[in-house]
Image 1 (cartoon, helix red, strand yellow):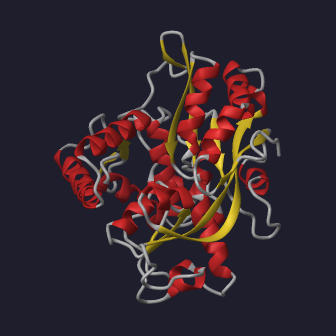
Image 2 (cartoon, helix red, strand yellow):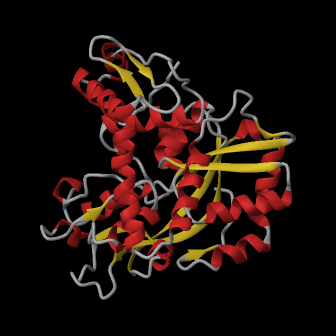
Length: 367
C-alpha cells in the first residue's frame, strides 16, 4: 500500500505526490499494474482538494509512470512505460538534454555512459532486493545529490567487496520519507531549519517522529550562484534572482537546495513566486550547471564543484552540512559497519577535499 506523507516546507503538494510515487516505483515499493488510491481517497487522506491529487496523477500519466483515465482508476504503468505516448514524451525530455550536453562539448560516449548510469540507478530492484547479486549486499540510498556519493560508494566497496551502494537523486525530503517507509537504507539530507539555523535534525523530527534515526556527517560544502564566465548579469546575491531579466534553473521541490533558496530569498522579503524559473525542475547540481552552460538559464543555486566541472563561475552564498541518515534499528547491519569505516578513512577525506568547495574536517561526526 502506497503511503504519501506531505511536508508543508517541501513545496507544492502535487509535486510531492509525484516525487514519492516515482521513488516508490523506482525502488520496487510499487509494482507495475498496482492500483493507486483513488483521487477521492487520497485527497481525503491528505486533507487536499481533489483537483490537487488529480493534477498529480495527470503528471504521472504524462510522464509514462501511470495509466488510466479520470473516473476509471489509476495504475502503475507496466515496465517500459505507457506505450507510444510515454516513449514520445521521454524522447522530448531526452533530446534537449542531449543537445545541451553536445553544446557544452561532451562527447557522445560520455553522454551514453551517463544515460546508462541513470538507468542502472533507477532500475527497480529484483524481488529479493536485499541482494545486489550473488553474495552482494545492496544498500539503497535515496536523497539529495552530491558529488561525494560516487567516491563513498567506491570506498565502501574497498572496505567490503560484497557491499554495493546504489543511489538515486530524489531530494532530501523524499529521501527521508523513503527511509521512514523502509524503502531506503540511507538518506542524504541537507535541510536547513530557518527557525533554529540547524541542519537536518529538525527535519528528521518533523518528518519521522516515530522512527529512531541517526545522522552522521558526510561533508560540509559551499552553495552559491552558478553563473556563466564573466558573470555577465552581475549576479551577487539571492535578491538578484528576482530580477525580471534573470532565468533561474531550479532543483526539485523538497530538495535541500530549494529549501535553502527559499530561506535566502526570505531574507530580502522575496518568495519563489517572484523568481522567473525554468519550466523543468532538475534532479542534480550538475544538471543545474549544464542548464547555465547551455544558455537555457542564467543562473542556478548549486555547489561549487558543479560550477567547476563545467568551467562556470561561482558566487558563494552559504556553507551547509550534508548528513547521511539511517535507522537506529540497522546499527548491527554489516553494510553500516562498512559505511562507517569508509567515512572514517583518510583516503575518503583526501578524495572529498580534492573537490573544490568541500570540507571533510568533520566527516564521520555523529549529530
